[in-house]
Structure formats: structure tokens, C-alpha cells
Image 1 (cartoon, rainbow, N blue to C red):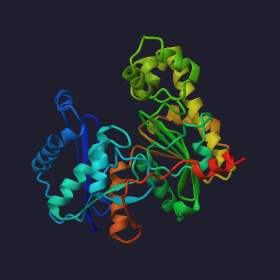
Image 2: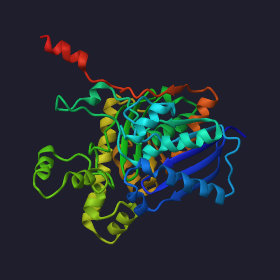
Image 3: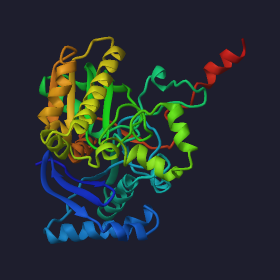
Image 4: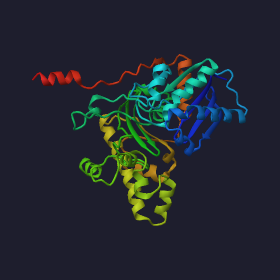
Length: 374
């Protein structure tokens, strides 16, 4: 077989782990954690010993040994915007992850857990295409406020893996294709990929773009400002409404596409409106990114849990199939993507990057100097 890679992907109340021998997944487990106990620990980084202990117990219960390990790959959460690629987990990365320098989310435990397991077995720990992967072109960064700029926060790990797999399936390289990638989950990402780079997308963690099962998407600015100063909500409540309790949850009380589709089947016209409005908005995003690629789109790749829904994907296809062939890749490839990235580096197919914590983009300072000189 090939290299033995252990993968770690922390979520809010569970941690997914998997062991790969080459491309073969030989062990997989979603290790559940007690939500109340996690909350009692006070901070996300304080959860590290508890999560590691439960992962160790899960491995022992399954009789799985990590002897002969070649690498450990973790989800790269909590990190600031950075270039795409595979990064070795170093002290600076651990420091930034603990602080949640990019965003405060359980994913920040990914580099920390990976480093601990890697140190135990004397191998390297890596992260692959972190959520903060930022390859935006300059035009995509500009907003109507001179002091607010867009950054990229999307399902980079899963979408890049889908793109790499699709390219391989047609005997091409991801770097030679123009693709629109769509991830349909609790959050929905749509990205324009030009020659292996995600040059345009939205920040799905900050309320940008389309509505999703748990995300509000874009809200007219004045209306949002009025809500902020209405006295009805705290800052924390509104932030949760933007990126955890918005979208379908806010409108319909559920983020599950199957439940929403059952509501529609039972004659719920409001559920039908919200569901179809989401399809409409996602399709509109796909159309917008087709213009970013100047109409030269090789394929539209649709992945994520909701990609299993024929009703949802047919609704998208009805609006955008004229743009390019639609390729359904339902489900998630996050664990496979972590292992594949590590193996590419072990085989010398891709360089292992050094994490410095330096921002991938430093603003338009040089351009502003030319503007102010006039």
C-alpha cells in the first residue's frame, strides 16, 4: 500500500478522524463530545486534552494502531487568510490557531491536534487548503466602503479536492481548467476557479453572498443597521443570526433539506418560497462567476450534503445548465482531501509550504499613494 496518514477534522461538538493507507480509508470515526462539558471548559483551545483523550480511546476501542505513520493532516481552522496549499504545522501556526487569529471556531483545534499526534509518532503534521484560503483577484476584494474589503472564507478543502478529482477524471490538470465549484451544506460556497486558483467568492462566515440553511447571506445594509440599533438584539445574537441561525433556520426552523422538502410535499408554500429562493440565489451566484471567467467555463461542480437532493440540484441545473456541463459530486471529501494533500507532499508532487502568519494581502497601499498624489 502507500503512505499511512492520520487525518483529524474537529467540529463544534465532535471530531472526525480517519486513517488512510494510501488512498484507502482503513478506519473512520466521528468522535462525539459532550456539548455541555465543552462549554464548561471556557475556551476552544482548552478542549484540546479532552478531545485528544476521546480520540485515543476511540482508536484503542477499535484496535487501531498508528504505528508506521508517515504524516498527520489536520483541518486548518482558526488561521488568517493564506495561500492555498499544504503547510507544515509549526509553532507560529499553533500560536495563531490557539488565538483564533482568523476566526474563533472549533476548527482551530485541527492544527493543534495534528501536531500532538505527529509529535507522538515522530512525523510531520500538516494542514491542507485551510478555510481561510484566499486567492481573490483585486476586483473581488473591493466594496463600496473604502475601509472594508472582502476576504475569502469558503469550503476550500472540499471544493479544491472536488476540482482536483474532476480534472483527473477527464485526464486534465486542475491548473489547466476554468471551473465553478459549488459546496451545498449548512453554509453554501460558490467559487470561480481560474487555472487552479479561486479568484472570486464571498465570505460565507460574515454574511456575504447567498442565503444558506444556517447563514443569512447578504442583508440590505440600512435594514441591518436598523436592527443593530433597535435594542431588540445583542451583538452576539445578531452575529449568530448571520452565520449560525440564519437562512432556513431563521425562516423555517430547520437546516435539513429533507425536512424542508417534506414541508413542501405537505403543501407548505412558505417553505417552498424559501427553498426555491435559495436555489435562485445560488444559481445567480453561478451566473455571476461565469462572467468573472468571461464565459469560458469547463464545468460546474456541485458537492456537499445537499448535492444528494435531486430537487435542489435540478433547480440549479434548470437555471445554469446553458453555461457549462454540471457535474454532481455529492457528499464531502474533507478527510480524503486531507490525506491526499499530505500524500502529494510525501511523494514530491506538491511543495510543503512554511507558515509565517504573514497576511496574504496587505491592502491597496501602493495604489492609494498614486491616488493621493493627484
